Image (cartoon, rainbow, N blue to C red; front, side, top):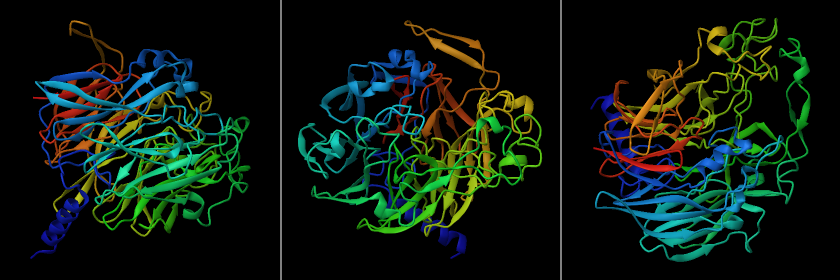
Length: 576
C-alpha cells in the first residue's frame, strides 16, 4: 500500500472519529468537538429561500444605538440541527441600549420542519446574561453570544451565575440546572459557547467580574468547566491552567503614545509598560476537544489584549501545556505595510517586520469582540484566529503543533473559526480573507495612516476573498467577491440595487460550513449566501437581504442539505 494511500486512509479514519454518532447533525459551534465545520451531507443548491424566521426583534434599535455607529454589532448562535429539528437562540424582553444589553432576555427554541416551513415546538427562557459592556480597558463592545449545544437526548443552555440548564430536547422540559459555583452570583458569567465531546461531556469558560467595575479592575476569577453526562461538574481556574503567565499586578509591554506617531518613535525605542491583569478566557471562545480528550481554549490578560495563550488541558482538567501568542509574527514594517517613511508605513529607519505599536515581533491578540475558537485538525495541529491591528486589522490565523510549538501563520484571522476539509491524504483550511479598507494600516490618524488603503498600498489593496489554504497555510485558491451592488428587498419581494461598493463587500461569516464534496458555504455583507466549489469557482449565490455592518454570523447544513444562514436578525432556510 502506498504511503499516500495509507495517510489518506488514516486521515479519513480520524475525521470519522471526530464526528458525533449522527454525523450529519450540527450540534454545536463548528459542528463537532474539533470545530471543523464539516458535514458529510451534501449541500442543496442555494436557489430559493425556503423559510424566513425573525429571532432578534431588536435589530432596528440595535443599529440605531449610538454605541453601534449604525451597525448590527451582535453575535448570534449557529442554528443547531437534529434531523428535522432546528434549535435556535431567540431574543425577547426589552432593548434599552447596547451599554445595558442585559435588559434583554435570551431563549432557546425548538423549531421543526413541517409542511415546507419551520414550526415552533417549544421555547425555554433562560436567565443568562452577557458580561457587561466594555470600556477602553477591555471587554466587549459587540453583544456576546448566547450559545447552546446538543448531545444525546438533551440540549444544554447557558444560565445565570455560570450555570447551565439541561433540557429534554424533545419537550423542552428542564431536567436539571447544573451550578458548578453554588448559589447564582450575578457577577459570574458563562463566557462563551458550550462545547460537547463524543462522550457527552459539556465544556465552557466562565468568569467572575468585579461588580460595577468589570473591565477597569482585575478579574476576580475564571474557570474552565466540565459537566459530565451524569450531571457532575469539575472546574479548573485559569490561574492553574496558565502556570508561568504574568500575574495580575505584573507588567506587560504596552504601546507607544499617539503623540509619537509615526511608530516606532526610533529604531531602538521601547514601549512603556502596562498592568497585565490576570489570565482569563477570551469572551465568546468555545473550547475544542481533540479525539484524545485534550481540551483547547484561549486565555488573555484581563487588562491587556496583547498577552494571551493557547491553553491545552488534560481530560481531568490539569494543565498540559500553554503556548504564548506573543512575538510570533515578523510581517509588520516594510512587509505587509508600505515602505518606511511613506503613508501607512512605519517611521523611517524602523526594523523590518516589527509591529510598529510595540517595536517588536507581532503578537496574536485576543479581543472580546471576536468569536474565534480553536480548531483541531486530524493530525493534531491546532489553529486559532487572532487579531492584529498593524496589518489593517486583519489578524492572523495561527497554527500550533499538538505539543504547543508555533508552526506558521496566515495574514488573516480576525473573528474567524475556519472550516476544515480532509482530502487526498491531507486537509485544507477554508477561511474568509478580508483585506479591509477605511481603517488605515496600524493607527487611526489619517495623517499617518490614511484610510484609502488601495491608493497607498496598491500591492495589498482593499479586497475580499474566500481562501482555501493548505495544511501549512499556503493559499491553494482564493475566490474574490467583486459584487459592487447594495441591494434591498421590499415587502413585495422586489429587489432594487445601487452600485456603491467599488472594492466589493466584506465576508461576514465567522464559521463557514463545508459539505461532503468540499463545497464551502459563506454569507457576505452584501446579503448573499455564496456557494464555492472545491476548485475555487462560484457555484451559485442567493440574495437574502442587505446586511451592511452586521456582526459576523455562522451557518450550518442539515442532513438533507438545507442551508441555515443568518442575516439582520433573521434565520433563513435556503435550498432547492
